[in-house]
Image (tube, protein in one colour):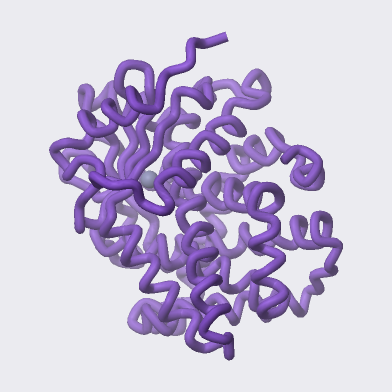
Length: 333
Ligand SMILES: [Zn+2]
């Protein structure tokens, strides 16, 4: 049994670790507590069945703290200080993703009340994906490797030259983190967020709900990509945002089909799946028309890169899926 580390102490460590990037927002935000709870939920999943996954870092849920970094920059961080893993997402990311999801929701004939509520819901889903992504950098050993290469600095999503030079595996690690982020999101939607998912389905329909969850992930991916520009055929520190969007969508639709049919007892047909894909594309097109124009003209290249990522990340995605029984999530929460 590890000693319980107080939240106040973790918060002080968070401020110390991210002081140079803006520190912590100096007031209680409606979602800061929820973000921290989400990070612990994910870290708990990350450590389950660790014996079956060699190389996975043992993370105890009491040693993860997540919060918002007071900065308008687009960035997210993960580091470790005095035995506590600290995940930070900038206010700039949080607000941009919220606004982007708001713009995506104008198309769906929702009442103003429904739209406001679903805006917050989808925003939380996008944050859950982002936190799952950051947790993967801890549990899959990326942070440890990065720190060995770069001293004690934190791992930041906005790429700096040093990181590009120091970590040639970055491209695949980011894809792996995206895959784990999607699995984490699906786990959350099958358990603690199941009511929110049901409400989303009730307010729209199954394919629209799945498509909008994917679009929320797309909002996070494209927001973060604003600070990491890359061309479609350039294998830089990250896969291209369009490739990340299609890759996460492919995985997410498969997992949500399982969650919706088993946890909600609502069938998802192959036609629903196709419609969900179109809903996701259309929603992102509202906010990222230039990006989606590339999809139109370069679909073969995108498909090829997505398939590469599916193949390369299948083992770690499966390992995460094996840590929790998706079909048994409802009885766990
Ligand atoms: Zn990352």
